[in-house]
Length: 441
Image (cartoon, rainbow, N blue to C red; front, side):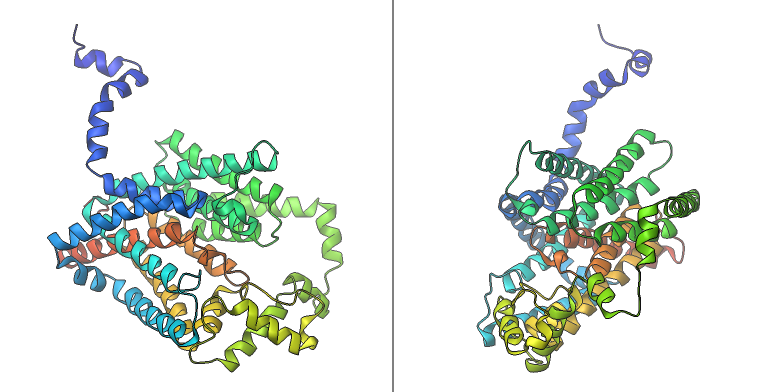
């Protein structure tokens, strides 16, 4: 006996969902490139090799789309604020290639040509995907996949530190990269928690649970003293930029609860008693002795200003400088894998022009995010990308974790999606004038 419309409306939610499964699957199959792209964003966290097949599929899809619509590439490069991103990226890549060619750098190294080309691939693919599908569909799919990847990441984290199971691939190989990924996932979920409509209570609770779980994981397991403050500061930034009318209430609660917590925490008060801003040792301890590698980095830049030292050579050359300058070694390790600064790293490795182009690349990405923030009615996605890059900018002062291959798809793929949305928004803005465009167009 066939169910009437009245029976369907009054049947349990589970049965109604089961009934609609074929229709849902049909719709989702129609947007398979979007799902494959979102799959790439998170699967690399668990091992770069797992992203190989999805990337090849996406590469084929990109070629087919460009062949069908060859005029789409110039429009992507020029649309919205994308021109500045592509300009700085192109200059940066040019000098990376020249630097590695002249200095005999390793093209397959993390700093080399191959991984930097992957950044461009995810920018381009994300833009094409965002142009092809409605904004609301892109945002909903992205949010769903990010929540799933966050839960899986945190489950494996708990199992590893509980001694139940040790995962030995992806971000789990290095605790610094692992908790950088946890921080990025936390701020993205926080952005969606802030901007998800109140009527979607269940979804908002999922995002909030992911944020709390990520924060507690950093508190309990991370050895970095910087990541928790970075998470808190970035969440506060997103709260200020949020369009949610209750965001300032959340901000007030955080401020006053934090003040009360500090007021009654004897351990924190004792540590404040020992603060001595005049002491050089205080600043060295605060920076975890990074002034050593930063001094070596400055000397590398002064000696190799134009084309740097080439990819993969920083440990060797920094070791030579530290051995020749015992006054800056301070009794620590004799070499470093990288500069411990996102902002200086490319200057040392590929020269001042490449380093300045990379900084311009980062700042033009911020400009692109802020442009989208002004144009979009649905702020969840622009805020999530703002959160990602805020972590990169702030944590990048003392680390280069955002450059690691496991995080490239999440960081730069998210920006690529936003660039595609910015392009379509620019077209609609020209047609409709100064009114904000609707994100589902």
